[in-house]
Structure formats: structure tokens, C-alpha cells
Image 1 (cartoon, helix red, strand yellow):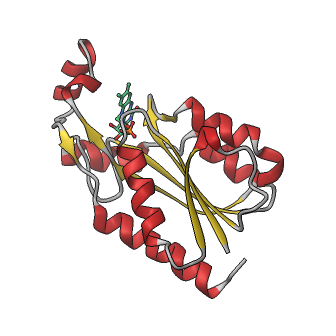
Image 2 (image 1 turned 120 degrees about the horizontal axis):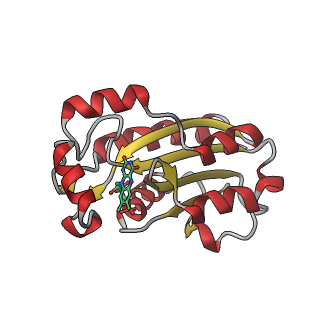
Image 3 (image 1 turned 90 degrees about the horizontal axis):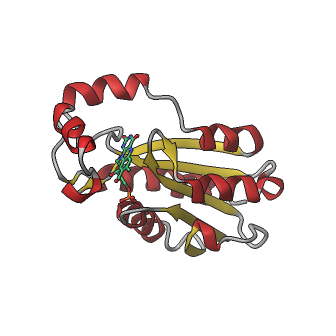
Length: 176
Ligand SMILES: Cc1cc2nc3c(=O)[nH]c(=O)nc-3n(C[C@H](O)[C@H](O)[C@H](O)COP(=O)(O)O)c2cc1C
């Protein structure tokens, strides 16, 4: 089985998540890790895991464009999606209280909704990423502080591994 893990990143933390997922799927078949801009066809893959960093509530344009570009090939495919933002399902770079609210209130990014409209999306998960002082210039830095933001790497590797494990189980039990 050929599995593709595709990602879009601005600062690198999403790439780290994608690498971890790809490593966790080793042994399921041939696992390829690619920047989403490098994916020109899905023909040779049986399973796709695609994720993006979140900017302004949405996937990066590179990832959204990949979904759009591969729309015809995504039809009916089994896909897993992930988003890397300030607030993950189990960790955050913001205050815990604000994160609890945002987990309830944040809609899925539009690109994930688009993906759902064409492919069979088994799951979409939010992971927290990493943030450095240079990521939020000027006023953004003040807003980040007001949201109880703290700089650093909030990626929860156990949660990422657990999510990957569920994909792995599904691929092993229902090979495509
Ligand atoms: C310009 C900019 C906009 C961002 N917008 C959001 C946002 O709307 N919601 C959010 O939860 N996190 C937001 N973040 C935080 C990033 O999603 C987070 O830092 C993530 O780890 C970035 O992934 P990357 O390192 O792969 O680029 C933003 C970060 C930057 C730099």
C-alpha cells in the first residue's frame, strides 16, 4: 500500500507533525512525505493524510489550492485531515480557558469542508503547533498576549501518535 502524508507549513511546526505521522505509519506500506505543492497526482496512493498550518482561521493557500487542484482525484477517496493552530484538541499556546472556548466555537477550515464535500474524510483533528515572538509582529503580539498566549512548542506528540495509531489500525484492518 502507498500512503501519502502531505502538508503545508509557514514556520515548520506542521512539517514536524507530518513527519511524526509519516514515521508512525511506517510498516503500513510505502509512506511518502511531501509538501502539498509538490503533489501533482494521487494516482499511486491508496491513502492520503493531508494537513496545514492555520492562518487567520484557514488552511494556508498552498494546502487549499492542493485540495482544489486534486478535486477530481479526491472523489470518493479515503482521507484523513489535520490542522495545526494555536489550539489543539489536547494542548494550546493560548490560555487554557480561551482554548476551551475556541475548541467549541471554531468551525472547520473551509478547505476541510471542501475536502468533505468530495472525499470520504475519516477524521479531521486539530493539533497545537509552535509560535515564536517573530510570528506575531506589532499589534498581533499584543493581541496574542491578551489571549494568554505563550511562546514555545505546544505540539502534543502523544496525541499525534494516538491519532496516527488510529489511522494505522484502520489501514491494517481495512486495506485499500
Ligand atoms: C500570521 C499568522 C496567523 C495565524 N492565525 C492563526 C489563527 O487564526 N488561529 C490559530 O489558532 N492560530 C493561528 N496562528 C498560529 C499558527 O497556526 C501556529 O503557530 C502553527 O503552529 C503554525 O504552523 P507552522 O509552524 O507549520 O506554520 C497564526 C500564526 C501566524 C504566524
